[in-house]
Each structure stands twice: as structure tokens, then as C-alpha cells.
Amino acid sequence: MREAGSFQQRFSHYASSNSRYFSDHRLLKPFLKSPATFSLFFLFFSLFLLTGVFFSTRLLHSSTTAHNLSGNTIKGSAKAQFYPNNTSQIPENPNHRRQVEFTLDCTSFNNITRGTCPPNYPTKWTVEEDLDRPSSATCPDHFRWIHEDLMPWARTGITRATLEAGKRTANFRLVILNGKAYVETYKKSFQTRDTFTVWGILQLLRRYPGKVPDLELMFDCVDWPVILTSHFSGPNGPTPPPLFRYCGDDATLDIVFPDWSFWGWPEINIKPWEALLKDLKEGNKRIPWKRREAYAYWKGNPEVAETRKDLLKCNVSDQQDWNTRVFAQDWMKESQQGYKQSDLANQCLHRYKIYIEGSAWSVSEKYILACDSVTLIVKPHYYDFFTRGLMPVHHYWPVKDDDKCKSIKFAVDWGNSHKQKAQAIGKAASSFIQEELKMDYVYDYMFHLLSEYSKLLTFKPKIPRNAIKLCSEAMACPAEGLTKKFMMDSLVKRPADSSPCAMPPPYDPASLHFVLSRKENSIKQVEKWETSFWNTQSKQP
Image (cartoon, rainbow, N blue to C red; front, side, top):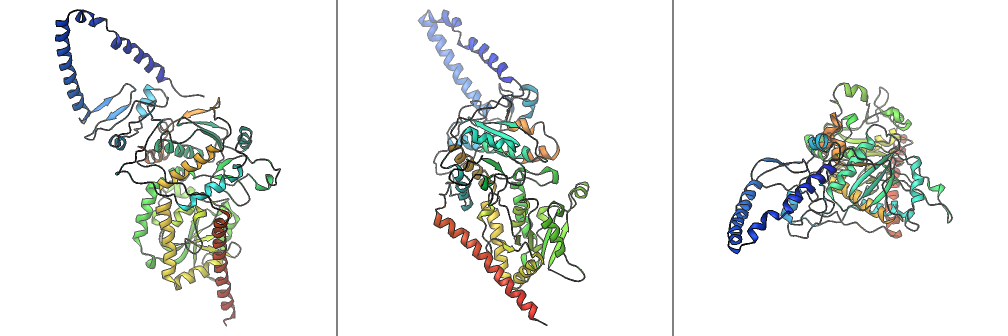
């Protein structure tokens, strides 16, 4: 395992040298020989201690900046921020806990520790049950899919050989040991997907210090899933390799994990989710639903998939108006113009917005769903970690993938004729995004997924020889431009004030069948309405 720098050796030498000075009691021997001199010494020594305590207390509450022995800057305030040097545990006093802040000290990282991760991150964090702490709520329902995603290994567990089989397509291996992260990279991902995925995991460790169990996993940053169910089916079939990625489908066993864009997508200027979610909420207020354009809107890159090119045929023309307004996004041109036309918070202008997959699932889905507009989802092939919690006709309107234009036109006509019902669908989706996909729950999903996954490992995780120990300083300090900005904006500055949400139980067969049947029946109902609508239209002169 490699780490950039060796501050710890110098600190150990300093501490050992000074400990000899403070522990040496030879200077006190003359005072110990006489009781009178000893009493006099004891009196002066007590006064000295009292003065020192008073003086130290004043210093702690002053608005000054000091440097601790580790070279970390402690910015004082009236509330006396607490920045622990003890690497094993943070005090459990609730008042101290709320004041803890993990500062990002790039000066020390670059100049003093010379690239070594700070030694003073806590590795243990105990949340007390006190009246001031918010109680842990039950996690949103889509967390139940964690049990389903890990079901292939429930009986056999995950052996080291099984894990290593996933290395073939993985971009990196992640190891978490004693609350610290180590990464072994195999191949660079497209753009900064791997960078911001690892960054997100580091923020999880800062949010729940010492709570994430030891584990070892493989992560593939490519869009489409690759662990085919058919290759591992049957009573004597081999155990599939556990491979993490951003999406899955019904024909694969890949384990879905929150995508990189929750911490920012610098290549196309999409800011971290926590800030963007607030922007989208404000953007929704600018134009009420009934005053929005009464059309279906889509803007994106059509070149990544044939189904998107097919969508372009639905655009308005001299011969036909399918109630659709479709625009091709030129990201190269947009970047040259400073992304002025791609502000997601300014795109909640239409009553209906279309979501259509690209080469696989698309990160755009959460932005579209957050808009209060009725989301028209062209029949998807893939799912991510939260979309299985969406219900057709309640959160979105299903659209056929083999007859898009007519399907979209019917959806818009229906919505414009049933405005209250259409508004309710749009509001249900945006409420889901604001409440059940807030960043707190994104971290909690990660926490529970990794915790449940770790229970399946039949081996003790170890640090590979070529792995690098990573921390927030190691990633953010040398970063530049939007990458650095988005890292700083999404930095977790303090541990969570409450425990993760309570994990819901797995689906029993009857419950799972009910959920899947309800989705299927809702889609069939819309198809019946649509067929009836077009049959009526065809009979008109």
C-alpha cells in the first residue's frame, strides 16, 4: 500500500523527544528532600496550575487561529470548534459532537505532511440517544431493493475467488479497513466518473466515521451491466461475481450504486446534487404548472442511441404536431458559451418533460423528475438505485418505445384535459425527489448497501500492494477548476447528528408480486386508454 508522504515519522520523533523532557523528574529531587520546601513548592505549583487553566480556557474561546502539532489549522470561534487529535474516538458529549468539523487543510497536506492523509480523522463515532437528536426514520421503500440486489449471494456468500472474477471489467477495487479507504485502479473511466464515485465514498466515511464495516469490492463505471443472469442460472450454476455499477436490468445481476453526478459532473457543469436540488426547488416556483408550455419537452444528445434519434421524428413540423418540442444538445458548443442554455433549474418551463434512455440508463432522470412537470418515461430497459421505487401513473406517465410520437401526443392531450390529475403526477414525482432522494438518503443507501454487502464476505479484506490510501485531502487538494470546486461544495464537513435511517425488511414473495403486478397493470391501463383514443380518432372523418 502506497501513501504520498511521511509526516507521521517526524511527528513520532517530536513526541518521543518531548516526552522524555516532561517525564524526567530529576529536577524535582532537591524539593522532595525537605517537607517545608516541598510544601512551598506545592503551593506555588498549585497556583501555577490554576492560572494555566484560566489562561487556557480564555484562549479556547478567543477568535484566533492557531496551529496544532499536526500542522492542522484550527479556526477558533465563539463556539470553540473542536478538531480532535485523537485518531481513535471523538468524545461522546453531544455538545462537542455538534461542534466537530473536519476542515480540509491543503496547506499542511501539500507542504508539511507532503501528501500524507491526516492522521486525525476519527475512526469511531457514537451517536447518543438524546432528546435534541432527530430520531432515525425508516428508510424510503426503494431501500428494500438492496436485499433483492444481494440475493444471488445470500446462500453461498462471497469468496475471494468470486470477488476476483469481477476484476475483468472493473475500473477499480475499493477496500475499506478501519474506516479508511484504499483504491487499486485498473483502468481509467470515462471522464471523471471514477473520481467522483470514490469522492462520494470518502464523504460517506466522513459522515459516519468508523460505522462503515471492512469490505472489499469491484466497481465498473461503464454504463451497461455485464453480469448476465443466464450465465449463472440453474441449481449447479457458478456463483456470479459481485460487481458494482450505476445501473442494472432484468437480465443482469450487477449491484446498483448511486452515480457519480450526486457529487458533481464537471465536464458538463452540473453541480453537486445537494445544491442543485435546492435550485430545482426554486426553479419550480418561477412558473406555475398551468402557466407552463402545454407541450412535452426534451433536450439531450441524440447521437448516443437509436431510440433518441427516433424521438427526433416526433418534433413539430409543417405536416404534423405531436405536442412535442425536442432539441438536440451540442455539448461542445454549450461549453464554449459557458453552459448558459443548460441550467437545469431554468428548464422547468413545460407541463411535460420526456425521459428517454441513452446507451443505457441516464443520470438526467432525477433532474427531469424534480421539475413538477409530468414526466413522460419512454419504456425503460434499465434501472438505477431509486427508480424501482417509482410507480406508473402516480410518479410518471409511461410512454411506448415502439410508437413514441402517438404515445406522447396522447399523454399530453390527456394531461391537458385532466389538469388536476396531471399536476398531481408531477407533484408526486418532485416530492419523491425532494424528500426521498435528498442527499441524506443517498448516503444512507450507500451505507446500508455496503453494510449488507460486507456481511456476505467470507474472507478478511486486505489492502492490495498497488492500492493507494485515499482521503479528501488527497483528492481535493491537487484538483483544479470545476473538479476542485465541486469537491469543496460537496465536502462533508462534520459527522451526521443521527444514525442512518432504519433499513426496511426485504420483500416477501407476496409483497414483491403485488408491487410488480401493480406497476404492470398501471402500464396496461394507460395502453388501453391510448388504444381507445386512437381508435376513436381513426373513425372521425
